[in-house]
Length: 313
Length: 275
Image 1 (tube, rainbow over the protein chains, first blue to last red):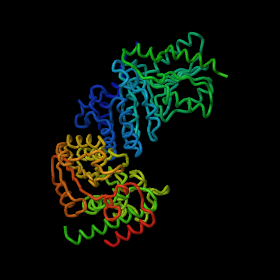
Image 2 (cartoon, rainbow over the protein chains, first blue to last red):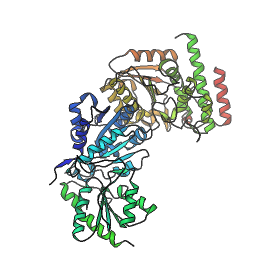
Image 3 (cartoon, each protein chain N blue to C red):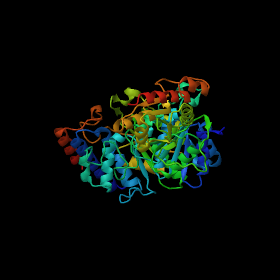
Image 4 (cartoon, chains in turn purple, blue):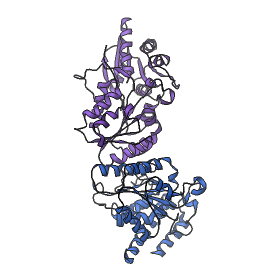
């Protein structure tokens, strides 16, 4: 079984790894131990600034620092970054297109025991609607590291969605290649395509194996960059497999499922079924039963895939 | 300051006031009241205090100015135009679809604007970020920010005050434009943020209170702020909303409405008479 590491851990380690090669500072809002910016703080205390529990101020401060030419990483939980500080991100960072990387951890239902107030299931929808914003949702620690490197090489605002939960590291760091804005076809197939992001990519692979045992040929695509969306890989899948299932740890409204549906509707209409939380708030619990309760499993992906195939014209 | 220099500054402030009236009249929208209240402070900043270069607006070592009360952009546009960042002819195109003079400051579109602002409460935090970066990069530049008295009702202003004080940003100078009026009425009636002096002192600021239309007091305050070390300075500037136009002064209705043709003629005649 693959080693398990949280994407937030990959982020914290990447900050340290790239610290000497890039000129950046890191801001946090009293969650450094949890967001893993604490790993960076320990090694580079003079480049780390705690803003206290004041996320709105932190985002506008980040904009001010970035306006002087420095790259800024600003971290908090997704709920308090994309949620609490939405307007500061929109007006202070995105409108002037400043070089701030918002690295939001504890996204999605897999926060677990803290429950609904901390389980941000709306952040992709919020960030996707802001012009100039790029959104990356890494699936494992290797992809998270690559996303941070890409963020450093990219000029402009970026929202990087990271998880609390330790998840299997299935990418090989020696061979993994990350291209901002490009999806990755993990498995070829012709009957249906599963498009997944973040935590759900591993489940998409499992679902594909389950379906393949039943004689169904499934294509699996990992979309790490949600905006700008890799329309080519999606439209190709739509035209070649004729049915899509999109899986994300997010409300089915406004996230990757919506983005894919919007894309195929305009150019190549095919059935698009969404796996995500069904417009409900989360609750406290251990992560595996929570994922089960909200239908974020390989089984529900497989079920939707079979349904999508029956809907093909 | 020499008396002749004060007169020169008064002339520039009058030209900026004419620009505010011209722009809002032409656009038939905008915020003349709060623009007129900060005209003297903005004049002093751009013509005495700030180390800026109109030929090199993005110069790394420049002093920065953030108009946190972004709706009073017409005053800032006037100062930038007469300083030479762009032609004063542009002022009449305020809020026009073909102009770079947006309703609220846009750092990407307008030469000399250091931060996009407009949503109240955000600008001063950005000024804190610039001041922190100055310390970090061992730069000598200073950062100035004007916050409205109504704007200080935003909680983020006080988050930023905590931040400025915590990081000992003595290269940062906050100016509160205390004109006493906001859209819905007197600030003290809508949601009273006073006392400013003891509040800001409690937040760790070096506090100076002045008449925001008296150039000698303005000069003394900014000089004192520059030499004060270890903590940020806040200048509480008592001002008159609509200053310079008799029928606009202290009238809440002139917060966000533009003069019509008749009012415009009367207003510019008053300003010109003062020159």
